[in-house]
Structure formats: C-alpha cells, structure tokens
Length: 264
Image (cartoon, rainbow, N blue to C red; front, side, top):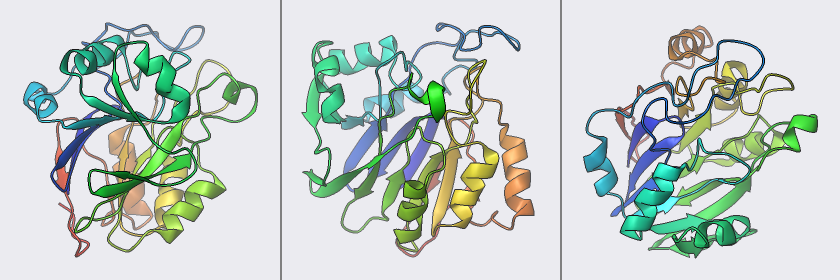
C-alpha cells in the first residue's frame, strides 16, 4: 500500500489495484479565503502550492473518497476539486448526507452505507463518525466521517477524517491490527474563537500511543488556521518514544506499507 501526501487532507491511497483520491482541495496557492477573521495574521488559503508532479498523481486516480464537504469546508473539496472530478466523471464515494450536494454539482456519486460496511471493488469500507469540534463551534461544522478501508492482501487503513480525539477514535485505534496504518489530522485547526476543530499535536500523539501499527499525521501547514508545525510534531513524537511508528510526511512524499508491519 502506498499513501502519497498531496496537501492538507488530500491524499492518494494506492491499495490493491485502486488509487483513491481523498478530499481533493486542488486550488492554487492563495485562491481561497482566509479562515482567520479577527485575530492573528490573515493569509489567503491554501498557504502553499500543490507539490510538483501532482498532475500525474491525480490522473492515476480510479476513485475519489469524500469525508465531508458541506458548510463551507472547502479544505476537503473546493471548486477546483469539484471541477476536476466532474470533468473526468470520477466515481466519488461519499456518505448519504453528502449525496444530493455532490449530485447537484454533476459528480458521479457512489453512496456508502451510513451504519455498516460497503463492499467496494473487492474491498470493504466502513464509516467511523467524526466529531469536528465540541460545544457551540461544533454546531457550525459538517462533522462527516472517517473510514476504515480493508482490501485482501493489504494493511488495514483508518482515515480518521476531521475529528478531535474521542472515545470512538481510541476504540478504533485500539482494535486495529498490528500491521495497520492510521491517518490522523494533527493541525490543531481553530477559528478566531472556540475550541479546536481537529486534533492537535498532543491529541494525535495520544491517539497514536493508544493504538497499533503505523500512524501518518497530516492536515498540516496548508491552511492559515492550523498552527501545528511538522518539525514540532516530529520532535514531540521522538520525545514520547513514538518515532518508529509515527510519520509526518512533507507534501508530495510517498509512504509505503506492507503486511509485515514495515513502513518506509
């Protein structure tokens, strides 16, 4: 299995004979509005460009997978991403609550089961609910879902989606097999007021410590409301003795994993 970190939450997962594009935010650097309105330094998003060679990666995709996309969550599916999917009529896997939204935008939607696994192209995808912020700020969010992806002969993959650390995340992480791979958000995203919307460094590393297998941390250094730095994450993972299990890829980096629990 290969996981290529593209930018923010956008990944290309090569699993079995499939290449699944996750949450495509494809806008050029600075094409989207700031997510900090009152405090801090305002910068237009994304704050970094797409990595070199991204066109070839995108062209290899066989499916897309959306964790959430409504209520202004352009950082998981922006106009450029919708246009790219619509022009290619790429099969787009999503949850029922996003079906109408995506269909009305001309996308080729394949709806997953909301409360149980769905058989997809010889594999299985199981949804895991997200908690995209607590309290009043959480009421403004589209919480969406993460996914457990299982294909014969491949490591189990858990894509957490946009979530803070919850008992459900701990439960899923603890139940994963030893050769699994988890992708967790660690950017500590927050608006001007209210709590965090996704895990920060501490939450992501606590989740990693409570689970098995390899952990990939992303949702980093691409948006103006995500303060966590990759360099700080790597140092803290080492301090906690997690450096052999936790990887923090740069944009454009490709990670490889196998059923013997090896990752590189």
